[in-house]
Image (cartoon, rainbow, N blue to C red; front, side):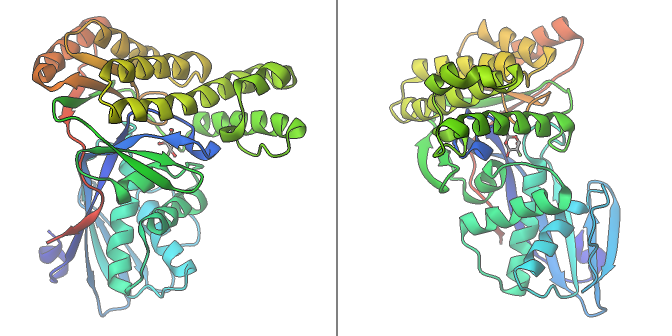
Length: 375
Ligand code: GAF
């Protein structure tokens, strides 16, 4: 498509979406997360031009945006092009001149489903553009560039998890990521465990107000604890005992959100250990506990996602199920014994349809590699 449209052979880069196994709304509290990349991705094809323009074509929307090189928009437009333009602008801020270019984007990460379609677009664009301008970024640096594009240009207050795993994921593994220093440990997913991702079909958005207000409540709780223990700047460093002592000085919501984040950090580290030790029973227990903490304390679930998790509980082969991603809709992640995955998918789809009247899209995925050039 790029060749036909722009008359030039592109260099092509792929960046995956992700599913988070556990560790929700902990990244911006400098805590732990455990995502894996999945086999849905964005592809970005790039080639230079000679007419002074930057053209960006989104194959999925059948739309093109054209700008003068050197005059990229300074403000977001609320349009899909904010994601690639934001990345180009951050490259410019880092001192790289963006030359005239054609960029084609295509993706199959389901939109608005909490599987990080936005991060996949940012990372694919960043790899392609960095290659064209000869910019050198290491894995964490590229992820930070994309997060900055989203925070400062697109206007969403997301943390680092999605961009980081899209860049740095490893085939067959989840990453236990320490969002404080971006160090990580690989947690191999056993070959006989399938990742079954069930879309509730309720749309999720990180740019929406709920994500931002949850983040504000988490920060309020950290500030209250920090008044007593100045070394606590983020909930990563807070404990359940801190909440028992000073929770009364917080708004009731901040207290509940903090209880989720603090216990989630502990669960995430324990879940990585359980996965590495192949203790699937303990892993499943922690994942189930994480869901109900996310639903009851963080209040980031919805009726449909709670139903999807409850329905999964009774099915043969389930190891653990929870709502994944930023919340308020999107997908559940189900770790399932691989031999049972097909039957699990069919039964879950059927029982969800009977309960809610909604036809869910359910995918059996596998943990894939991070972003790379496609030869
Ligand atoms: C969204 C955000 F983009 C992430 O940074 C993270 O906070 C997640 O929600 C919740 O864990 O995907």
